[in-house]
Length: 349
Image (cartoon, rainbow, N blue to C red):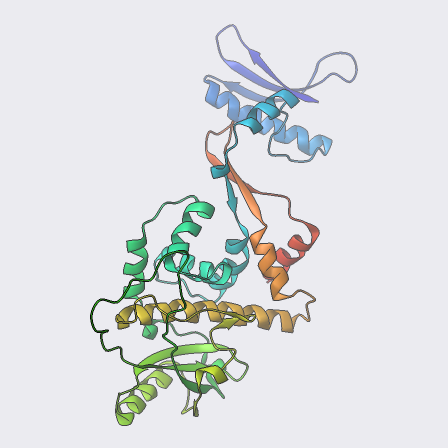
């Protein structure tokens, strides 16, 4: 069976599925008559789908293209049509499941996923969005969004999670980590400004799930800080959890991902708002990672975090314009068996 396009005397175009297996043209099914080429393309697309259903042929991206047509089309492909899909499919799915993006700018999602996929400076987010999502953004909107983020807006978990929670209080390491993605750190001119010492209060459930976070200046009076902590606990549905002071070096799992430090060190230490926004991104990324680890434990899965991260780095999709509908489409490249298993695991009900 194959699709036949017949041009009538009136100029209209009729689309048929015909069979020539008996030595003559037998019309299997008629798909109607089109007055324009665009309408004919749509009818022809339906006819091709009918042939694939009847013959059991695989549904391919290129339909019934000849080898020459396929080669010509492939020669027009550019790198801009091939995008990385893994981080969105894997980390983005868990991000959505936790409700971390509700009521927030879509750029926050990119910040969190990029911190999981390729942690570094905010400039890496710009590169990530441009290279892998095909959208150009500037650095300034990224920092503007970070300056608008508040830890009080991020509450993770339920009242059940808050039962038996503990609060860990530790100092935030603020020293510069060296060059940031090839960018030289600015040299100090004159005396350095006074930088307040920051303490972070991290509320965690009994099984290690982060529920919320707050930051305080170390010089804040204890009475004022305790009152703020009490309001924080009430917001997170926690009933007077114990507050355990820690040195940052004694808290190896907070804000770390599989031995990979999330580097909770803001670029500009003088801007408290930016420090808070940076903590918001780190907290959301930490929550996604902890949820992923919980899923692995609950299913007794043989997957490792390293395998999932590698799958995220090697899953691509192809963007194209449909020759039938003239609309943009995308298709995921055929996953390897391991990638398919990881996809099924992440998207399980």
